[in-house]
Length: 486
Length: 138
Image 1 (cartoon, each protein chain N blue to C red):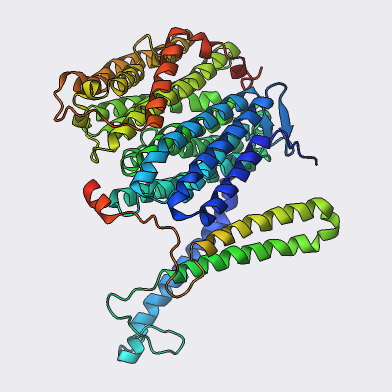
Image 2 (tube, each protein chain N blue to C red):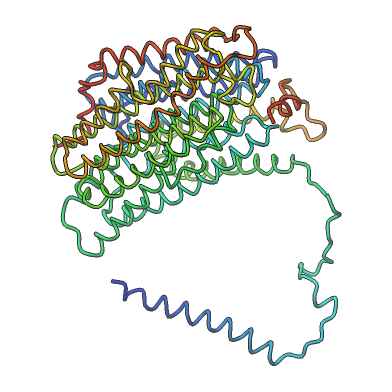
């Protein structure tokens, strides 16, 4: 067995950076532990460059369990970009809060290492290891504000739910291995598309149910969503941003591979499950979001509702290759655009968290006058999350909607539910711009936002508008077809 | 297919029935004469002691136990490698050096953070979170 070291170069660089950060933190003077951030940043950039050198023909290594194709590269670039953003907005937050810094960057990078491994894992074991690598450091950094009971609660809830969902998922994986005799995703797909004897068929369906339930916890789909708002609220804001974007996208990357590669033959069994999950998730997420008065909780419920939209394309899978392709492209595009909007919104919240500890929506009062750039940015993100053109969020919703209509039947019904939900969500998304524009602030003092945070918010705004005006950026992705085989 | 599991179910039922029956029968037959010594929990012949209220263990025991496990696992992994040393060749050697290097980094970290000082650990990193911060946030 030879190992293709070039294929795993981005991961090797990231692992090396992780070690350097830990050693550096142990040896540099306490006043300078923030230096872990530039070190991490350099490592992530180097890893990003290594990913870009891999563009071209797909590579496979570790006996076919690890595959670097266009799908994997797209997600790797995405995860590393999210890592850059989270690192940039973390610097001032952790330095001023005087939390442990070296350890934070170490754990954050470890989590991102799991994210980067995830889209390449074409084996149940690899998939499980990557998923755990994403979650385990997440438990710790969610509880990073050690002296704040809410942060402890966040970490504990996330830990218990995470471990439970892993156990459920692992049980399902063991059943799949029992039915098909293999852990490779492609070979599982081949085994399931053949005829299974009666008992094995039932067992395979039970296994798929367990695995989907496990992933539903990870992506916080209703009825497995209750941990998300408490965890996001208690965790440090940059960590909440990470959990709502990269961690969730990693769950979806795993789910896409499992459903479109390994379990596609059983679609008649699992598409109704996804339809129910999707409707419940978007409806309950939106209804509960209507009552939120705290911005991080609002964003948490918004992220739950958005997960419902992302689950919708899974319910459209059929025997038709074109439909599958559209559904796959719609889901992937939605995940990527969603992450940009949500990261942007959290960036503005991080800027605000320097003066408001409660982070209520009413704290946004008059922000448009106090910090025009942040105000415009936040308005763009909220409008985009609601799905109004000319923003990226519109195209994300449009693609999912179009895939649903073209599928017909159940797809049309789902698309209509989604449309109704989007309209309802307008109310709470526009609450924030309303506060910023129409409500008088208590003070006229401009909001002091760190340059890095402002820069990231501006960049995310530009990205959202660019996608909105020029949707081809995301629309004609050749990579999206690589997983949806013939 | 399910019928293959019948013997297991029968065994489980028999075990349960036996356990319940022995407890019931012995409680009916035995004389009931409790003494303090009989009622005390059995601790290998040692007098059971109740810890004073509010007693706390120093958390360093926990750190020590965790460190022990880390290095214990390292040793366990060294054994199979030593057994297959010739067949694994240079590749195995490099892999093992990488593995030991990883654990060594963890060791460095623990040492610098004062995890190995038993009395009054020398806290190196001056960044303690402020309690005032938490009160303000709460």
